[in-house]
Picture (cartoon, rainbow, N blue to C red):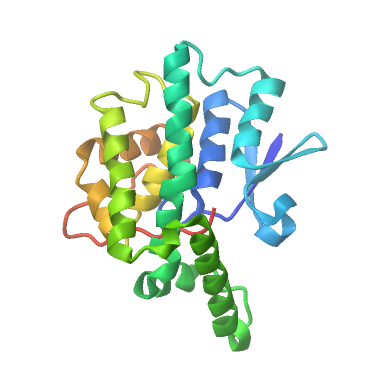
Length: 254
């Protein structure tokens, strides 16, 4: 059985990281049995989660986990898609992971109020209390440097949100009235998109990004549809519907 190393469930979502959630859904879509084991990034190859162990083979990074599943278990996540659809799916994945994700990091880590309500309250419990504030400050500072290096962290928050909201609008248009990104059946890119959508929509943090996604009923319904279909057995299939009065989401790093 495949062992998937994770952060662990977070505020009603499968995992704190959208990339771990992506790997979980890929394994579910392929019908590959797995067990999720909470871990820490410093124990992982490249110091990032997720990674898997599969009969002595270690595979890190959700995209390479997908390649491993396709190679070893001969599962075609994009069966039936045209070359044009495959290209569009890949472009959407890259928008989610290389752009929108960094706005999610800003929402969770840099906004101090959101940090203290979300990650700051949940991620550091294992750190001894006397040094916990120092560790929090160091990790937040490291995340800020990461965002600055990417480029998106150099913008004032309203401009950063404007860029990210365009991503959200693009996802809503791409999904349209379809059940899944490319039609009636999920494809590989749905794992990426679902991971990001469910991370942003998770209560209880508030941000312009979450409010923008919440305004798109098709994205909220998409989150609910996949959660119910693939994660109900884990107790996550009854995620409460979002209302305009409800504050916004905050999972953790990816």
